[in-house]
Length: 244
Image 1 (cartoon, rainbow, N blue to C red):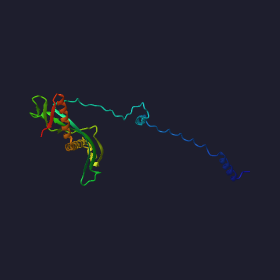
Image 2: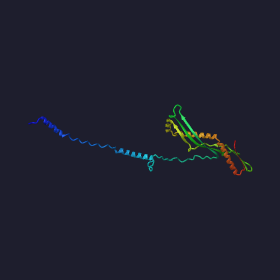
Image 3: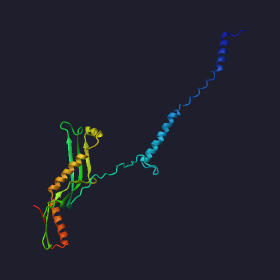
């Protein structure tokens, strides 16, 4: 007796169910990560090592490692040339030591100082000597008595020498510059106009020396010096005066 069609269909479905799903396909192998080519990785590695050494040298982490930022001074000056020799016949009787603070302010009329203008405080130190020019003694300036016991010496007035600015004790204390001044100093051969400050300081010191009692002190010291010198030569009466 033939089985019903329904039973055959059920057995066929059961057979299909027992088979189950097929094996899952194997996962594809992962691709290896791409590496930098040697011509790129080598310079980067060397740069990183160099940066570490630079930082260590800058921070003095390795005492035995020389500092790559250390400056070296090389003097390539030419030999000093003696241009002339000037014979002097002056006696310096006094020297004045001066100090002046230069406050130089250059500003624009219609622009703020942050854009255009500069202000500099310069501390200048210098000396001025007061001397008697013995080469300017006139005829008859030395009068000796017949018995050579008395002498009269007439000296010229003392003069002031030029101001000698002491560059070791002179310095810029502070400087404020506008934007355009900083830009101009970048292309200038004399940033900050140091020469102008030195000339101004020299003029002020020279003027102060003229207003001081430096020449009077020099004349008094010169008189004392000649009185002692002539007395040591055997003169019993020594008179030293300054010409009118």
